[in-house]
Length: 473
Image (tube, rainbow, N blue to C red; front, side, top):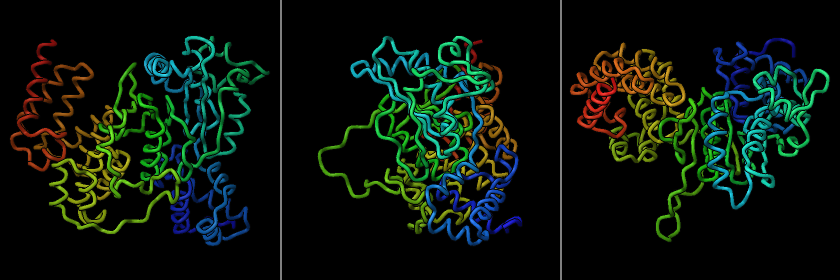
C-alpha cells in the first residue's frame, strides 16, 4: 500500500503494538521524535508484505511471528544513548550501591547486573566498567546482561564499536583503559566484552533471565510502555533483584512513595530503589488460592489483559477498605473504570497507595483529560512524581492550590519540598497556609491524601516542621 492508512487502522495498529511489544507512544506528541510514528510504520510494513492495512492488521492480530515483531521493535523504538549517561546515578552506584553489594556477595565473589532496554550497549558496558572497577581484587565474577527488543541495536552492541560522540561523557582515563581506537571508532577491549552478554527480549512477553541481580537498570523505558506492561515489568524486575539490590530508573520514571518490595534511597543527588527482603511466610499452612500468580506470572502471555467484570461497584465499601489499607480489595469493590468521576478519583488514589504508580499516573492523566481543572487529580499526580521529579511535583501542587484555594494538602507538600531544598522561609509560609486550611479540609481529602495521618496528626507535622525550620535559621 502507498496511501496513508485510515486513522481507525492506525488506532488498531497502536493497540496491537501495545499488546505484542508493550510499546505505547502518545499519539498527541509525547514521542520524542516529535511525530506519531505509527501511521508510517504501518504503511511500510503492510507494503513490505504486499498487503492492505486491513490485511496486515489481521495477520498481526492472529499470527505475529518473532521476526515481524522484531522488525516493529526496530522501527518504533528510540535508540539514542551514550556511555556514562546520568552521571549522578552512576556516582551513587559506584560510591554506595556497589560497595554494599560487594560486601553482601563476599562469600560468593560474584556480581550480577542487568540493563533492561539496553539499546546499542552503552549502558551495559558502562555497568561492567563500574563493576570491574569496584571489585577489590581479581577473581570476582562480574557479568552484565543487556536486553532489548530491537535486533539492529543489539548487533551494534555485540560489535562493541562506538563513535567519539557516544563517549562524550566518558572520562579520558576510562576511555584509555577500556577502549581501543580504531580509526574514527572506539572498540571495547576484550576483557570488557567477555563480561557483557546481549539477549533479544520482549518486555511484554518474555520472562527476565534467571538469577538474582545486584543492580538492574531500566532507565527511560517505562515511559514508552503501556501502563499495564510497565507495572508488570516493574514487578518482574523487583522479584529478580537480590535482597538489598538496586533498581535504577530514568528521571522521567517513578514508582510512587511506597512501591511494593522496594524502598526509595537517595544519594549523590540521585534516587534509586532498594529491594527489601520478603517478609517471613506466615505459619506453615498452604497459601490461599487467591495468592496464586495472576496475569503477571513469568510465563508471559497477553500483555494487556482483557477488562475484568465489575465486582460490586460499591464506592462506600471501597472507601472503608482504603481506610483499612486493604487496597486490592478496595480496587475490586469499585465500579468499572470510567463509571463516574468520584469513583475514578478513588481508583487513582488506591493505585497510588498500593504502590502501582505507573497505573496511578495514567489514571490521573485520564481524570485530567476529562477535567483539566481537577485540583485533586493535579495534587495526586504530584505525589506520584514527587520522588523522581520534585520540580514537576511542585508545579502540580501550586496548580492544585490555585484551582482550589481551600485545599490544604498541596501547601503541606509544598512546605516539605521547600524544606528539602533548604528554603526555610518558603517552608514556613507554605506550612502556615496548610495549618490555616487543615481544620476545614474534608474528611475525604484527609483520607485520600494524608498519607495515613489524621487531621490532628497532620497539624502536628506542620507545626513540628515550622519549629524545626525556625531553629535552622
